[in-house]
Length: 214
Image (cartoon, rainbow, N blue to C red; front, side, top):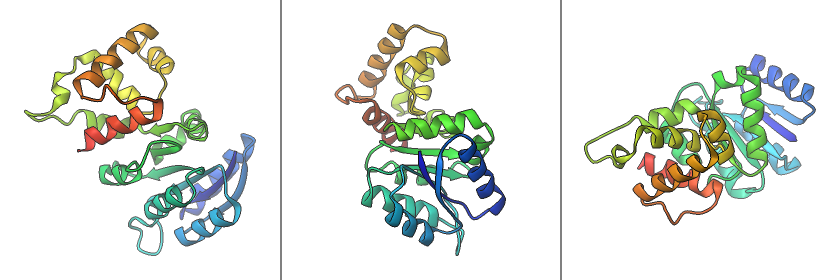
């Protein structure tokens, strides 16, 4: 993959550059602020961008706003956003239009190299990669009117793994159940959440996340 990195921490940025090069990817640029990120994307059009949310000068949401702009201007470019903490509003902003070629991971996940690289591959392939901790915090939120209360424990488990961006086969492997059981549970989930007419892998991920964030 042709990658552009945006991270203001020099140590983490250089570490990611080395990791990606060692894995055979081409790092087109590694920058420390959002303005440079947008300039490099416009100039070089990478396969995927990896960017921190909080960047100079204010260290608030510069990286997120750059990611949203990249998704609007260059929809063919995958975007993987890194965050120090779970910030559900930021996740919602990033996923507003669609969940194709997009990811949101906590920075701790970068240390789990295989998971990090797998997330990049899924985004590059047109899918999604949502951090399990972000999904967990969305799924466990309950109220008396929460439709998630209608789901069985097994359906909740399937929903959590689904919302991370995994395929049916990966869900079956992670939960140690058959592929047919995954499909059965997914049908029930979308029926109970009134999402039964949603088709397509990335679109159903988006629909679930939107519903949980509403």
